[in-house]
Length: 259
Image (tube, rainbow, N blue to C red):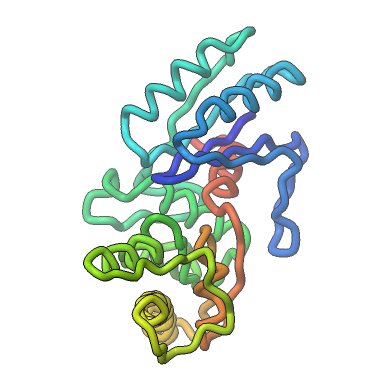
């Protein structure tokens, strides 16, 4: 089995062990990798090596990066020898993995968001959750204790937000130089933009948690995604960082063999 999370910036993959088990205290992968879209040569090399070590028979892919990238991935995977027995695309459905999809049109809920919710619910069953993925976009989704999706928010990701604000200024802030000591009130344009974006992200997450808490006291906030480590120090609420919830959700789907 090869699990693939094709996002808007990164393509992440993992090959779970046959007896792979996840719990809140253990969410690590033995075989895991991630590349940016322009690093497809490295991706192909890594997958070819995995296939040579032990043939990949089943591939499960969540792709939100568009048909063009999906075609590239499919064409490469079909060239592996021996050919994989099954290449499966993961899509949102009305109900899956204990999660009830209540989107107005269930098909339009991003497969990555749906997989993340399945992964989060599998780790914390019977728990009200706010699930934050801080990537190219920041998504904030809510689950009731019984796994019902209660809706969510989508806002520009931290880097996208900062670049948008800075495009007409002389100082483009460097997200990679951000640290936990950043002042809330800055005395220069670059730091002021970073502070504003950080606090906008943290404020949206805090509001989601506070709103969810009115109905479900003790709601748990989960953070995932590349920008989580920048946003986390600015959150005044309890949270847990759980990486690669999409892949965990895909693994849950594959283990349960839901059709």
